[in-house]
Image 1 (cartoon, rainbow, N blue to C red):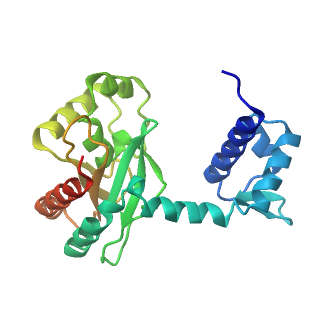
Image 2 (tube, one colour):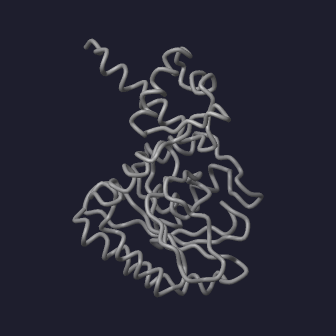
Length: 252
């Protein structure tokens, strides 16, 4: 199959947008070209078009390109669509209001956990849980809840990759992680205690699927100084109600 010139230009534009999204502080044209493997002249031309269409912005003083306002508008459209897990928003708001804790939804994407929805709680101290953030799956309750329900081949492939230490409490031994996944599978929920972020613990459950592996999981996060592990475990019934309601609305 021959790739048309239009397809090639679209691919290049999307690659540049992806790189800009990974560097919100901005990139010069040479750095953007290097990271996307494009000639500087091509990167400069496409970035200019993205700026004209407001998908990118350009700071003349710093000579840097960054994501533009149209990216935000696309993100808002995504969250309102079925593909944006909009059906999960109302149950998550109910959960956050009832517990006072932030409710976060995540999916597995390219071997990471990608946060797709976040609802803040009412506690004085809140967690950093921006939508679009990627986290190491083995260091998050969301990741463990999702991975334990994947096919054996998928789990094996994930455990064959390096499991970096995010904090000094992150479990990085593949055998130990596999044992933890078995415990998660048996009890139906996952937890981490400062494995992904110092001072933060969380619990998570996968949204039940009628067939196949779970696609979405919901977590409750807490600051360790404010919420003990036992107190967080006490919210498991509410978390279970939330994921079951989401599953009913999703129709998976």
